[in-house]
Length: 249
Image 1 (cartoon, rainbow, N blue to C red):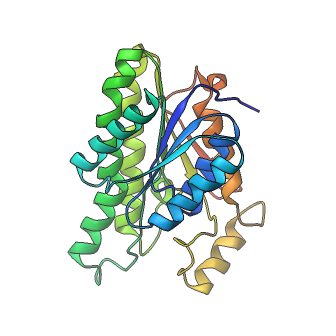
Image 2 (image 1 turned 120 degrees about the vertical axis):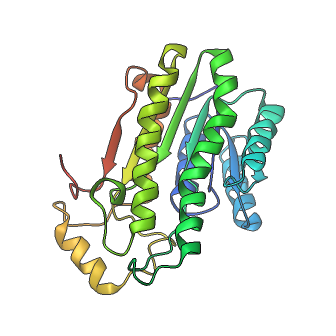
């Protein structure tokens, strides 16, 4: 098990779902955790309490990371509380699924801002401190929809594909400062975000998964923990699909 003692991790959108699982897994491995949330204060505080119960250190920080000033304030709060930021996990995300002919412009803008612009904002805010320390681990949570596309998700798929481009470009920018930037692309993992998918689409997805089962939050968190660790120090600019074989190639 890759250990993270002495590291400080900021996880965006960490109050529930995959973000919550990532925060808990990094805490189990010894990292101090900043649990970012936008509106779910009670859920975020529950994550902090769970980390503290296992003997870890954590802090909940409200910030709408789709806004640059909020993202900058988040990184400052983490640094003020724990002295540094070593690991950033850009997990904040949302969906507004609809066929393009019926998709509203605001649905496009909301998804692009929440999923892609937020990742850019947090990276911009965090990279300066990482460059000074000559150390950093950035992990972006993209999606298999950003690799293969998905009908009814032109906004979501575009935002997640954009995160892959962001990952690869930033990896090239900061590699000479011992900062790695990688992405994890979950497949179908049942969470609040996927609960509203139509039953026929869920059946279609399950039939397309070679391992013939859904993934779980912990399996995504394990991949993130690996990228956050020193064991992954020679890996950067990569996208790891945690999807049961749904997307290969």
